[in-house]
Length: 335
Image (cartoon, rainbow, N blue to C red; front, side, top):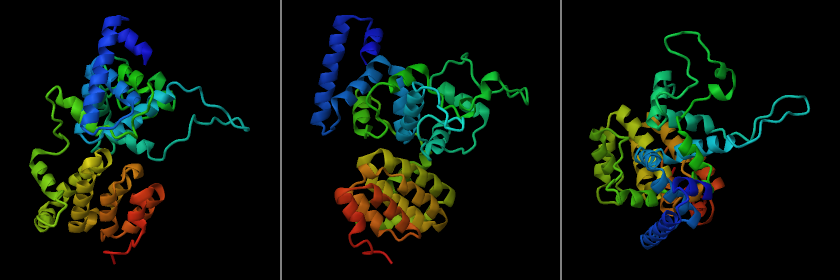
């Protein structure tokens, strides 16, 4: 981190001291708001916010779109792989890939590139790259759409054929700094940081017509639950699928909103059984280490076909009170 501070602040001792003072003030404000983060995490986020403001806006847009964890996971994997040595060979001379691949990595890259389109066209991939901050005149590995069959020389490598999420060099350089952040709950801090510039981070993932509906579906108390259930039943199945994807990301990335998101997913899947598989997939992607007890209790009580598999998966990865909530009397409230 010293190198990037020295470069961005031109080695000016006064500017470096001001940055450190601002960091200490921000850390103190965050602590008073109940936001608990390691000093190293706050320092890395302050580097992004103060020294790389355009890239900070990109990260805020990920949070606004409920895709922060996915994007950071892919970004950090790309940044770390860029520093690793070439792949080795086994006893038979076959090449071995560097590092163990996560089975969800391809899905994460695909979502990071175009969340709602499983197979985005090349032009959409290029547009994503530009949105992330890559200059328009930067050389790319995409073949020219006007020349069918043309393959660039760089495309012959396996890496060149992988989807490119479009992270610019400064963002990749920042991601290389310790510590890794993809598994850290950054949402409360980022909301605090954004508030200083007047950005309230209203989600732009959902169409305007679905935002009020989404708020109604997250009711967790007895009062209003019946109306929320009826609202879920009235939502067209296509909109319900969009809402389930939205709540799955919300439950995964924003711990304070996790229970309401899970309640909404359960309501929508109950009202639209054809979306049960999508609901179960979304529930399984909740990070076990972030699983709240109230969320676990609600998941245990869901009456969805296949929910037992989700409960067993979360229980195998969780611990403490959340694990107990999933495993103790796990048939209560369900048939």
